[in-house]
Image 1: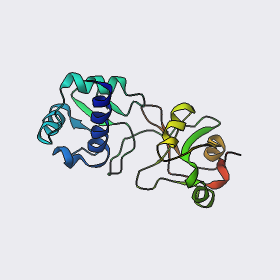
Image 2 (image 1 turned 180 degrees about the horizontal axis):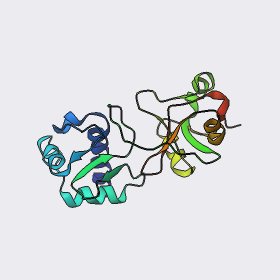
Image 3 (image 1 turned 135 degrees about the vertical axis):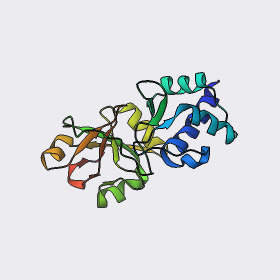
Length: 182
């Protein structure tokens, strides 16, 4: 599988495991899991065939670690980012002092007025590091890095979760906790 095929297949898996499982004739359980064999069959039925080895390669090499296998390797799910109803069962955790969010500069006025909203997803996604965060922001235009005063948010009563791939999740980030770029 060349890098382009890997990226294309990873995007398809994101669609299936985060947003539209029916695209591969699947149903996810309440925690977002599906059987690996059913996923492979569903991908083939959707004319997007993938082998178990290719799936393992995508899970193991995805820079954002978007997918995870169950401990026994028989099930798979997306680590976060769902727009469909799932309960990933992450426990609340105290966040570090600051976290980051990447966005496009064209969204800054909206964020200054509304804060960071989860939109169609279950949570706002934050990161403890800036490189991938800026890459995420660049997907939609000129990137901007927002610094989030996460510890202060937690002290104010906001609940944080940390996904298995290290992404920090929160319901909403009010404007007063956001430091905007100069």
